[in-house]
Image (cartoon, rainbow, N blue to C red):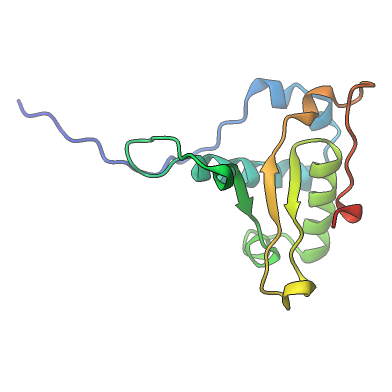
Length: 136
């Protein structure tokens, strides 16, 4: 009997760890932010793999993703909702902004984000607050 070669098929799910689901930061997210967090987690997980047998990509930019308002609109988020979602995810410690896109690039530059674990300390004195609106 011949062995079948495994295809490197795209996974059909996003794994959300229990430490995220059980965190105070996640419980206090709005429904839209909780839904969009799954898309962020998916994009982060797809960015980590370089496509060759699931090997993790190396380099500084491998942990950063771009998420445009156009992409969010295709997923069903209006511009205002997506802006509020980004604010919530940054404020609660799930993502950290790296670069703010938008008008400075004549709408040709996208915002870049990095996955964060600040949410683990959310609601404690050790939590480092960050605000998307004040990020430049």
